[in-house]
Length: 146
Ligand code: FES
Image 1 (cartoon, rainbow, N blue to C red):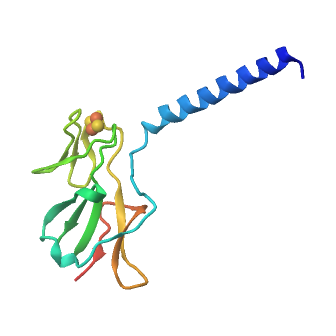
Image 2 (cartoon, protein in one colour):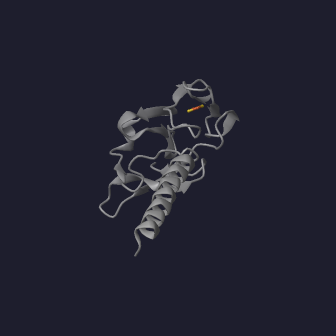
């Protein structure tokens, strides 16, 4: 291979690689950051969560909601740029750019582009109740604990 040809191919490869890295970085902003999306989270005894209340699990960036029928979980990560949401009287608010969601996780005002993700809560093979952040469900699906 001639020197000029090698340098040309190396330059094209470098530009292609840099473009791919830039494209991936750009596209990541459109997806919520779901740390540890593949792992399951042991919930423990559902009775430890107050009834008719959203409880924030800081280490998992989730809110757990329990009522007299059961329990469900919603992501606490804003779908705009990934800030952690705060609970408000009638939903969730983002402290970063002001997006608001209702208690079903539906966007009420932007700039958030999508509703919040709800995750399945199931009894695992070992009998423990687990959250599966890799399996999304609708906001009305609950693990029936009573
Ligand atoms: S990160 Fe929540 S509105 Fe921007």
